[in-house]
Image (cartoon, rainbow over all chains, first blue to last red; front, side, top):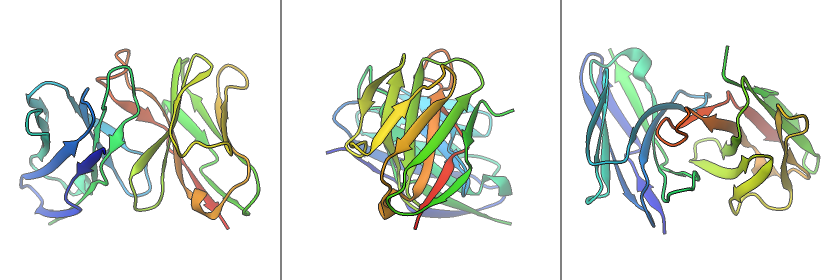
Length: 111
Length: 116
């Protein structure tokens, strides 16, 4: 089967750093996505990893290890507006854009 | 201005009624996708639409669902006979960039469908 696991909820402090983990077991792999979703809104694209290693985009970085079926999203200098759900999604095969989605990690930022 | 506009933003309908959800991209796209998200649950793929044809659909996308591109610009998702379990947010999405994989999706703002 296809499965993506993320922690349900995390809490962090404004200004700090938080790492949100994602593990996946899918029939194939053609890339992993991270999305941010505020309550009642659509997901917005954050990052894409298809090769092993770290991709950095400003305050957000995403890491991938294909051999371990593992990714993390690192958020630095946390701001209150970063309170949201963070969704991990995998594209399981080339030519297919039917993503497999994790349930999301709800991140709560405290002052 | 959003790249993808969805209407209505919220629709309440009685069980058994037909609903049509609309999606209008700001520019022409060959690829379209419909997803749904039941409150508190995962995003689920419904259907992908390429060049005026369905290219892939999930098990959720059964005979009560249909997609159309009625006038070359906007896209519709029709649910013929709604059930309580169809209550969800419905999102349309387009590729986020020319490379339709590495930029992810751009989602519309969504339609919240409530079946009563």
